[in-house]
Amino acid sequence: MAESAVRDEFTPQAEQYRRELLAHCYRMSGSVHEAEDLVQETYLKAWRAYDRFEGRSSLRTWLYRIATTTCLTALESRGRRPLPTGLGAPSSDPAADLVTRDEVPWLEPIPDEMLGTAAADPATVATSRESLRLALIAALQFLPPKQRAVLILREVLAWPAADVADLLDTSTAAVNSALQRARAQIAQAAPTEDAIVEPVRPEQRALLDRYMAAFENYDMAALTELFTQDAVWEMPPFEGWYQGPDAIRALIENNCPASSSGDMRLLPTMSNGQPAFGLYMLGEDGVHRAFQLQVVSLGPSGIGHVTVFFDLSLFTKFGLPEALPS
View 1: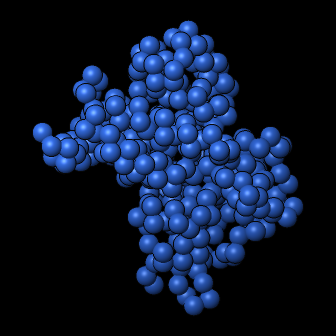
View 2: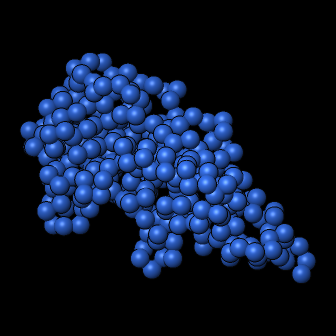
View 3: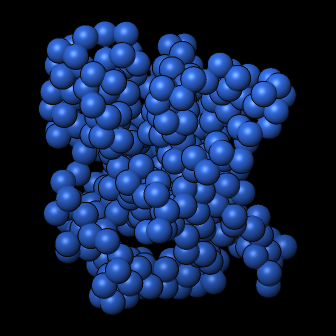
């Protein structure tokens, strides 16, 4: 078969894996923008090499090999993507001035809609919510890139150790050792399963409704009641993070442009397998415009963590409008 004809076969066969490869590159990079670029690079490399694909492994496995090496090459020249809680500083004073760290390549959220996690999808395991939790992605950033790859390939994709060793050009013993170290690191940094509540029960959905209403009504007393006692609020690119309901309330009251009911409107969405909201702020012209994206973690007794992103390009990624109608 001619080389061009062989390559013509590539796109329809490979396209079915795009979403799970996006999830894989996101776990490796911690950035939805970088992940999209890495997937594009993976597909370009694979298309160019497809006439030499001998079928000794499945096409899916072959694509993952290319994606992983592409990610590792990219990560050689890039630092990790933290959240403010990962910078090592203690919680901040909500009365202090906000300090931005624009030079830091911050962690980014990813929309559930981009990953296609329907139960009928064969890529469900690879894009499962548990393996995409924002806290877990943040914890992965503390691992060296190769150790990160080992953990993802072994724990998320269930690759045999020998296959991972072959990909990384190392020994099976080295892979098993790296996996053990990675597990220990993640166990310290990532949330346990029983510390996270899926927003599927009526009472959890009611809690999220109350959260939306508290913001839209600018009811800070009601908002405070929704947080757990050790709740955390962080908002890159600001370097500080804040702990406890009273500190979070003081932070919002001291810094939020809103001051009364109707100043803010929220649109619900999903990010990293968690509830999320696009928050819109009322302008002087009477229009609510995109202001921030919030990713919310629910614990057994309330809202335990909110990560706020001010990168407005994320609204496009999440399919959220730049402004709301009056």
